[in-house]
Length: 228
Ligand SMILES: Nc1ncnc2c1ncn2[C@@H]1O[C@H](COP(=O)(O)OP(=O)(O)OP(=O)(O)O)[C@@H](O)[C@H]1O
Image (cartoon, rainbow, N blue to C red; front, side, top):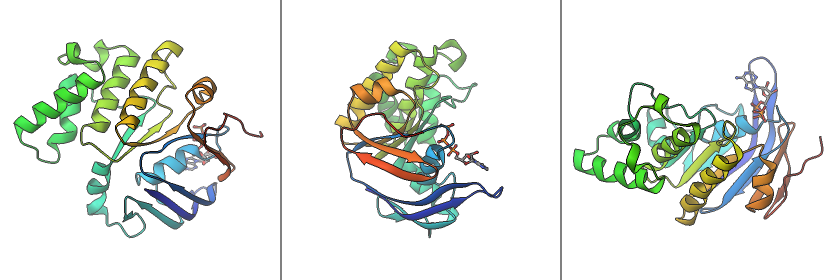
């Protein structure tokens, strides 16, 4: 469960990117976050995994209050949340297997556990044949699959994705969406910022519209639509 109460965010340059956001997202939901460029979608998402801190207001993720979370507890939060980016953010000097295993190794899993968990998630995203390849040997879609595998290897309750199909062609984007659908079907909450109107209007889920740092619409099975 994700709760935001009166969340306000002003960047040091004076830009107000969140201007009183209130929202509840229940366990297992799939939520699209849409809105015009500069509306505050990335800021909204970054505050959920504490990449950005709100200026005021409360953010509670699976019972963890980010307002009172100590910095040393941030890794604990990050284990509960998988994050997927538009530009994949893979480590270029590690192969597919190592990029995914890295996320587990940092929390001191045993080698046997690592092997099983990494192979399982790589099978889920369809990359079993490419485990020894490096990011620069993969297509964009394959790199995004690695990044998704990395995001779910710790079995997080929530996966947050900021424009995960933004760098991909339409066919590849649909393939990536199938993986998110599968992850969601297994019970993981998904929060996804996207500009992809066709996807939002075809694979229907809850749609939150962010405009001017505010949630201006919130509809289950809604359409990709906003005023400006
Ligand atoms: N680190 C930052 N410092 C200062 N201002 C920022 C910072 N990050 C974002 N902003 C500003 O906050 C506002 C919201 O930006 P944000 O990236 O959240 O929008 P967005 O809806 O994700 O946009 P896009 O769809 O273009 O990615 C914009 O005016 C932006 O310029």
